[in-house]
Length: 399
Image (cartoon, rainbow, N blue to C red; front, top):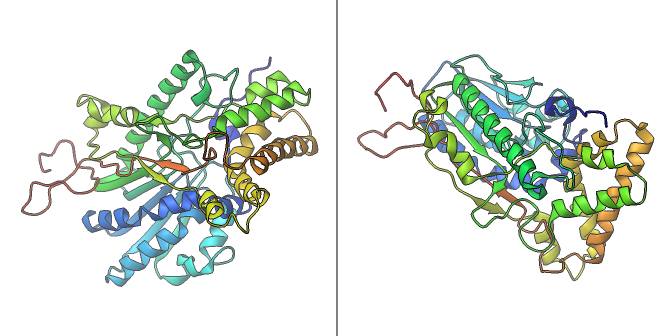
């Protein structure tokens, strides 16, 4: 078997041409919940000449666009007329053309095209993954990332009998866990370098909560088990090879709360020495909007209509995994096989939308955490209470 390309930078991208933000309503709902937190963070970020913001792993920018519009509008209405630089980062394969068109009102909802609405707001794109440092030292006021940093920099191994680490064997799971810990430390150190003293980094991400729940596993069928089942069915029918089955290994690791906390709990770690402290890490659910809509409209919405709304949101972020596994084939054949794969899953949902044990796998959709990633805190005036995520100069005693 030829060794596949395991590097995430080379093989991953979200579905382009605006498809991602159109179909991932659940991700947008999770991001919108962060507006209050980000607004509070800006109240405590030290004043610098230029306010620099980065949205790491932004895809086409559509899921966070409304939130950033609201934040920038509030900043401007407060009388703060500083220049604002918005940096959107993702892999080189990302469809940045859609992102730039959205911010200029040429695509999507032009009501939130903040680049046209406000003066002195500048939008930039960076086609490099967030596992690397993307800005100069001490230049970033606020970093933000949503539903992105569960991607590891590379697949440490291929998973033989499943498509995702949640269904891998113990040795495979261990390798993904070690890779994810290494990557998380690298991500944090790079953000520490980028942040100005007193800057903030807020991260909401997929993970495994205290009850063992994760995206696609919140009751009823398990989404990744179903991915595996329908992909394996194609192998059993002779449509794909075993090599192609195995190559569809997601470059993801869902961290537990303990795994998120680990670099911060060790006071002698490079993370702690860099001036970062985790103040709060918590889990929360964001309901799957498609499931909610279906439950409210069962009298008028068929199970097939529900399936036809649900599959595209899965496809928006998972399709490239299966297409990359088939990369030795011609494009038409790849598209036909991938369509057949998702159509078989669609038929299953249409036939049994609630699942054998109650809710379908996407019920209550996104598990988001940490809700607050606090990077060293500073005291409020006349108070010993700590405020939002902060980076300080580790050589300073001024907390």
